[in-house]
Image 1 (tube, rainbow, N blue to C red):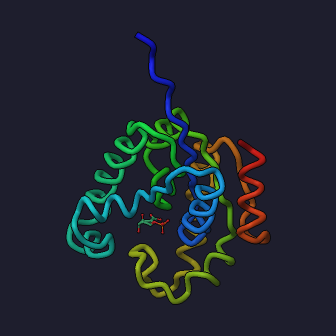
Image 2 (cartoon, helix red, strand yellow):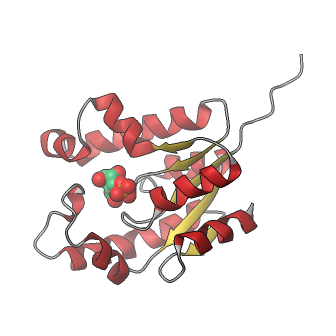
Length: 173
Ligand code: S3P
């Protein structure tokens, strides 16, 4: 029996608000594969919003579900572009699964640029604090090395347009 060719998944990692969904959707359209958003899959599974789930069950319970969803998505047959949640790289196993099972692109944005985009956002539980910029800086310093460890390529996402970013992504593939 001929072994089935492994599916090609392009995974996007990076901070919340860094453009993973926007770039992911356009990239998927350009290469003609489905776009999958792990946060969306998680919300389907829990039957509600991530913010609500965080409030009721806490971050660890969310991370457990996130890990299961990422593993299941990587195992699913078929090509896709996969946008992951900003904290998906926190667990080493997720980093290893993503690195081994997909082409990982890190969309890097500075905390200052992220703050400008997310100032009025109320959907992200980790940013519902008195000083979101300080929080973004802290998260960035914690996570930037993890995104780099997980990724095959780093795309600087602060300056270029979405169009330019999609082209940069296409050139890496
Ligand atoms: C999180 C980012 C969110 C979502 C959850 C936790 C994080 O995804 O998974 O709120 O830890 O940074 P986005 O990166 O799509 O906002």
